[in-house]
Length: 624
Image: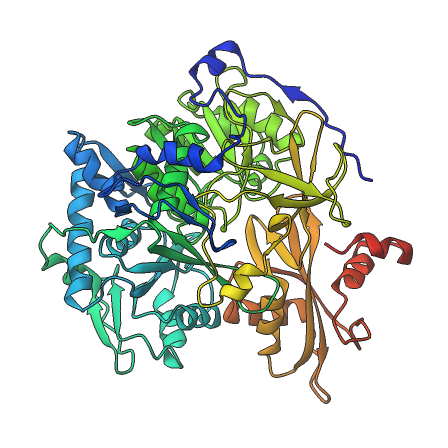
C-alpha cells in the first residue's frame, strides 16, 4: 500500500467562492439525465430527447436523435445574438511585434470562404483532411471550415517529422492536406513544407489535393507529385463569405487526433459533433470559468487536445476572446509571456506545469516588473503540478489574494477536464483535485477490488460521458481493448484520499510524458529502428523536475556497424529527423544486449530500474 501525504491545503476566499460558476461538484447518480440537461448549452437543428444509448457498450452513443453542426454554436449563434463585433481571436507573433485580431463576424466569413474552397475541390461530409500548420489564425479557420462542411479534420502537431506525419495521413485515409510553408520558433523558421513534401513523397495515395499557406508570398508553389496543389489564401479569397453548415447526426465524427498508445502505431482518437460539443461547452463554462468578453490566453498548440478544446471549440462556443501566440515561451526574452498578459489584460491563463517551472527558473523579477493585475485564474494540465510551483504561481502570477491556481487532469480520449480543482474550491497541494460533475472514477487494485483511501491503483472512468472518445479510427478492436469490467482504463495510476481528492501517480503503460506530450515508447523505438545501424531499441522515461520525464534510449547495433562517438547526439539527430523535435533525447546508450523476458519482450522496467540506480529487489515496483 502506498500513502501520499499532502503538504498543505489552500482555501479560496469568500469572494472567489461567491464568484465561481461551479458551486456543486457532486457527481450525478444518473449520467444520462445529467448530460441531457446540459445539451441545451449548444445549438441544435433537431433537439435531442435521448441521452445515453448503451446498447452496444462500450461503443456508447449520445443524443442519437439530435442533429447539429458544432460551428453553429461556435460562430453563427453569436452573430444571431448581436455579438458579431465581439473579438473572437487574437494572434500574437513570437516577439509581439505583430498582432492580428478578428471578430466573430469576420471569423465566420473567413470560415465560410475556407469551407467553400474545400467544397470546390469536392471535399465534403466524411472526408478526412490533415492540417499541418503552426499556431496561426489560418489553422484555426481550417479546422472550423472542415467542421462546417462535415469533413473530419486531423491536426498534426507542426513539429512532428515526416515519418510521423506520413503515418497519420495514411491511417486517416486523408483526402486532402493543408500545410503551411513554415512556422516560427525561437526566432527561426521551421521548414514545414519540406517535411510535408517528404511525407507525401512516398505513399499517402488517398491524398488528391494539397492546400499550401504561403506565409512567404514570394515563394513558388511546390510540386507534390500528381496531386493538385493550391495556394490556400488564393483559394479562399475567390470564394463567397457565406457557407451553409452541413447538418449532421450527433454521432458524426468531428475530428481525429492521434495520440501515443502502447503499440508503435499511434491511435486516431475519434470525437463527434454532438457529445464533444456538449461536454466541452459545459466544462468550459464551469471549470475553465471564463466569462464572455473576458480575455483568455492558452499556451498550448492546436496539435494537442487542449488546443482543440480550450483554444478553438470551447472558447468559441462560450463566446470568449482567446489570445494565442506562436513561438517559444521565453523568446525573445524571459518576460515575453508576462508582456503578452499585461498588454492584452488577460483574465485567465491555461498552461502546463512545465511552462510554469520553466518561468520559475528565471526568478521572480520578470513577473514583478509587469502589471499582471488582470490575471485572476491560472489553470494547469499535462503533468502533475507540484506544491512549489503552485505556491510560486499563486504568489507571483495571481498576487496570492487576487486570484487562484487550479490543477486538472484529462486526456486526448476525454476531451475536457475530468479531475480538477475549480476556482471556488480548496486546493490540496500535491493533488489534482476532485472528480468533476458528470465524471465517475474508480481506483482499482491489481486484484480488481476498490482501493482504500490513500492506496494506489489503476485509474478508471466507470461511467461514459458524452465527450469521451467513440473509437480508434479504423480499429474498433483496439478501442474495445481499452475497456474491461471496471470501465475505461485510462492507463494512469492514481490515489484518492479520504476527502475524494485525487493524485495522479503516472502511467501504468509504456507511454512517456515529456512536458505534457504523450509519446509512446514503441513509436520512438520504431523511429530508432529506421536507422540503418540499429538492430534493437528500447525507450524509457526517467523522472525530471522540469519536464516531468525525459527520454532515455538504449540501442544495440547491427553486426559491423560503426559505433558513434557521441551516441546521444547521433541518435538524437536521427530522432529529430524521423519523429520530430518533441522527442528530445536526453541520453542514448549503446548496449550489447537488451534485457528480455523468455518470450522475447524487452523489459523496459529493468532498464528503468538500472537507470535510476535501484536494487534488483525494487524492479518489481516499476511496471509503470
